[in-house]
Length: 427
Image (tube, rainbow, N blue to C red; front, top):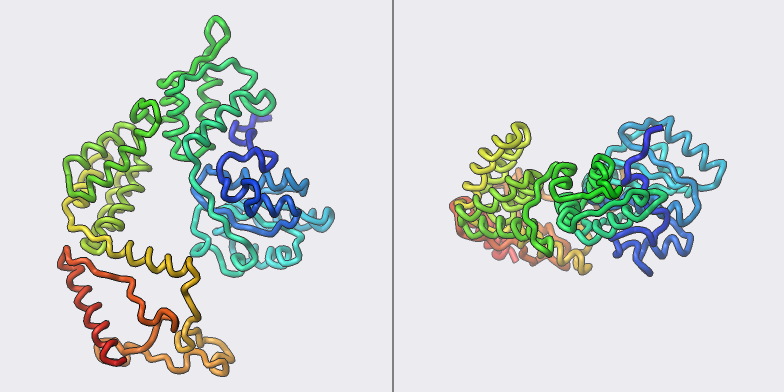
């Protein structure tokens, strides 16, 4: 039988073994309370890969002693779910970890829904996609949604220390000496993915020859080779990676093309295409935004090209994109607008959707007063007619405040101003 990877073997068996995610599993937090009260409900866990979604599901099952089964919404079929359902019927309750739950097709979904309703199956769906967008409302309404936070470097180092000392599931039967800079490289260069860090650590240990004293020494060179990422810097706090990413974005935001190329060059030398790509896409929409709407599309095309050709050639499309980002006009009006809207929503300042905007495409909608007085803008001059769109309590709220740093945003700002003036005349 093949030996299971270290990350699999080290999965927590109880909530108190979980590292990180204390906002969910820490003492007196929501999942901790659910398990303690033995009142589990179906849930969706979402966040980047390797940050603990499966670990939390495994720990919940271990803490409650329920049967625990794992399926994948893509690769497992309806018959596999029927097997789990039959087991639930026999044993009373089964915890089902369903990976890639956002890919659940209608047939599988329709099969699961009544089982979730009855509590025969407690679903723990795992996904890297935003469930409010990617998951069917029928599943969403029957689950609680929890967002997992990225693991810190300290979280990953704690997990590695456990693995190195655990003789039953980990690497405790090996005599291992790991240089501090090597350990920090595993924790930092894995970008919050503890699975990647643990599996690279195991590869380093089992592929290294012990010395005459039987000790396996893990150096930075070994760590770089096993993780296939070069160390960005060897500072004692392990913060250099994040400092360079921060300096990279701030240089672009400040239109300093030379500094931006320098910091991106450091990331290229570290082979960190993932961090470069993510940060550049964020900058295209956060810092350049409506001042140059094409910057996002150009950046995405450059990243896709970089991924196809790989390093060293990948540096060329990336350089093209970062120069454009640096020398583009800047506008943060979009991020400021959505953040203000979200602030209202999170503070409970929302309200009912006006009746004339509600869905009217079903039998009985008119009896409920839905969509009756809706005015279709395309029937009016310039495809605009004055009517209320925001809920009553927010009807005069303005979230978007345009910047005037580019011709494009000046143009849409002119349209925005005219609409607001026309609305004011009608009041």
